[in-house]
Image (cartoon, rainbow, N blue to C red; front, top):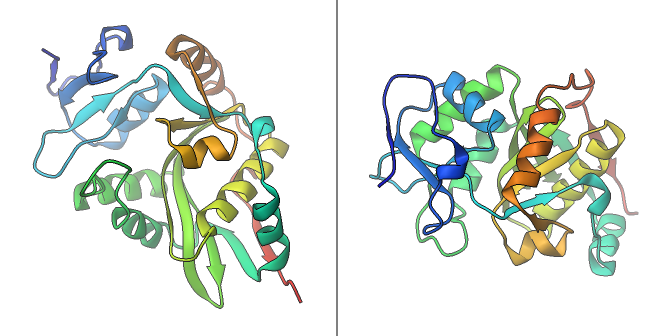
Length: 234
């Protein structure tokens, strides 16, 4: 059995999370900005299917990438050089969430990004704690991702592509930018071959939480989420 959260703004210790399914910690509660920020500050995130209660997770091991781990393949480097594209931050946050909602996670038939989730993260965006990184081609939004930011810790949530490698373009630019701004780690939550190909690794939950405890208390640079890039391959 897992705890059922009520109105109190608290979570059980992450060490009490189940091993099967891996990381399931609690159910219930709400998606208020205060609860979401408390969750992320303790290495916890929501993930649930439509019609289910809100489920809270803290899996171990944890898929993460430190900016210095980024791996760019030769084919992706060619795409970075040879495509016309723009990278923008926070110019279309809701549109990115809506697009991610149409892209189920691996092994999941539907999407967990239901309307209440979109509204919750849009509130975080308005507070300056959620951001979108977008790939644009010919004036069209073709890929990107959204993430939560606390201190020098970034929590990747979801990504989408409408054009081959479009989300990878956004991810590479984001990681390279964050490396210049002193970000310690990007949480990728769970293993996927896609993330592993970009340099993400699995680490023990305890090691992840050690970094979270330090990074979320640090003051980020004021230009952490200021970035725009335009590439003309001609």
